[in-house]
Amino acid sequence: MKHMLIRVTALVALTTSLSAQDRGADPLSRLDPSTRYSVELLLDSARHLGLPYGPIESKALEGISKRASGRDIVVAARRVFRALRDARAALGPASSSDELTAAAGALRVGITTTQLSSLAARRDGKALTVPLVVLADLVTRGVARDTASSTIFQLWQSGAADDDFLGLWRSVERDIVSGTDPGVALLNRARQIPAKGPLTAVPPTSGVRPPEDAKT
Image (tube, rainbow, N blue to C red; front, side, top):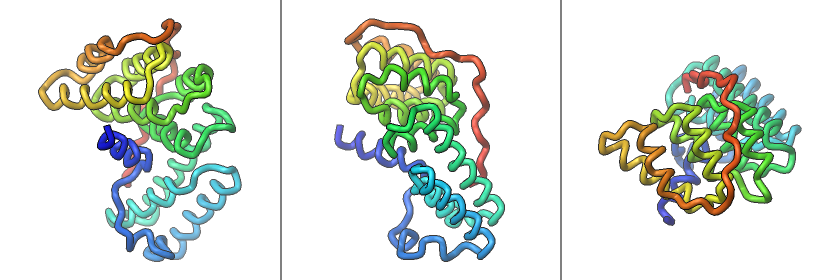
């Protein structure tokens, strides 16, 4: 389980691994002046709004590592900023930085703010980070967005804990690698998690937007 928690931490970062050198005292020094200015404006805006700014910087550094153009780096960083801002609106002002980062990742693969709000409305003091990370990863692995969101929502409502979501994630990943259809794998594995509370309505599925097609 420790291994799975490490993987969740990596996913919450919403970026690829970056070297210590890239994260030095001046991580944006390799950007051209115009691009750097635009990225720093986004970072300042995030700080002003109380949003986590690490994902924005990480997206810029990812663009640098991929030798993306300055324009593409700014566009991708702006998308992350907007996703974080929308995540705050959906989850509420008391949400943690990890929750906002995870929610932004879910938004970027097509989960809607309405679906996020439905989860947040029934959080009962529980952190949403792990369920949201698992939700986003399931979609990236090929599970239909509505199937993934409704399944995670029902498990959340039935009292599933972080360990349950991590176990589900691991099992579905293994099944997909073995050739099982992603949606079928999720539904089969979700049935194996015992309910710990009453099931209620599934989250709304209308208005699902396509995932953002960032280049970096």
